[in-house]
Length: 250
Image (cartoon, rainbow, N blue to C red; front, side, top):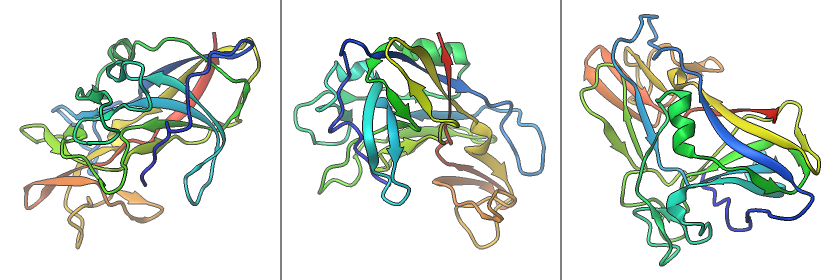
């Protein structure tokens, strides 16, 4: 799934808007192993992030935005230029700023949100069902960057591993109920994630180089983005985390 969310989006500064501050929450308790053993070594997941948005709705088939979108956070390395900003390793948009730093999701909430340094964004009042994260912009003929977009490490691994992807966006689970903002409202929007479902260690699943025994989705093996076999009986795999949104009035 490739998405370029920012093409038609700009930070709203209109009068009579609603105020939104973007936050993240690391809800991981411990790195999960499929045999239930507690992990004793670290988990690392670092992404390059461009921006975060609220979307009125998303088409479930095309994953295109339906209705309005409002940007609620922009990476400082973009220098305020959302249209030209991209991650390093892409040549387009030509001449725009590039994001070279990785955002470490495996830290405490205080560290994560201090690094976000999110400021309240004024957006158009309305009803929003999803939050969306933009991680790159892929314009034809480029399908993925020449630089890594992610670094990861799981239990038993001895070093962080690079991963490169042209999968440029992540869409959260739906707000339940939808987030309805009126003029003058002030809220904090938080995306929670659990790295225990994102980086998984266990025995290799039979017949699959990118799956771990016991890691299932709807009863079927889950195929991860990348895996490393520590030996014949131990595999560590990585995927992007799922993001669960919540909102609290300020």
